[in-house]
Length: 162
Ligand code: ADP
Image (tube, rainbow, N blue to C red):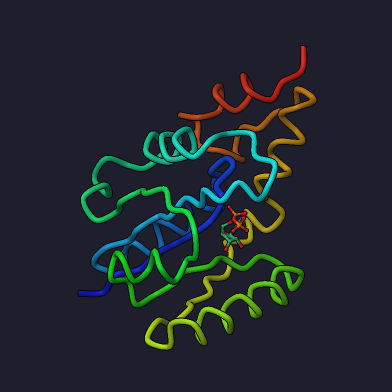
């Protein structure tokens, strides 16, 4: 059984993340979307909210092989816990590369039996990030097409300034 984990902050989930999830779910038997709960970053949504938004955004028919779980601590410990041998990361521009490469090599040294797989973004989502979504939402811009329609109002409701 091929088990993968796709970790991230998902603050909030974007259509770029969803695209990666849908593509990877076709390649593996089980995909864990791991929502990092380390309190390291200033986040707009707590872990439960981020998990709930991902749930709300996933097509019903895919939920049987995708599980959305919050985790804290090291990714490799989470991967071990769910018996995942694949770590999925999305790559946008070269600017993602250095950090992602460093993290992949670190994870490889900590858990040699797991492999990191980089999935290139769909060009439609090349410039899409959770922080860009938050910035646009904060100032009342249109976030249609950036986040799943199921969570648009939640995102605007949290971020929009009066
Ligand atoms: P992190 O805080 O771990 O960087 P993010 O929630 O920002 O988490 O992203 C999770 C993963 O999704 C990362 O591998 C990131 O590169 C990838 N990702 C983010 N946005 C996109 C996008 N638009 N297209 C493809 N992959 C993306």
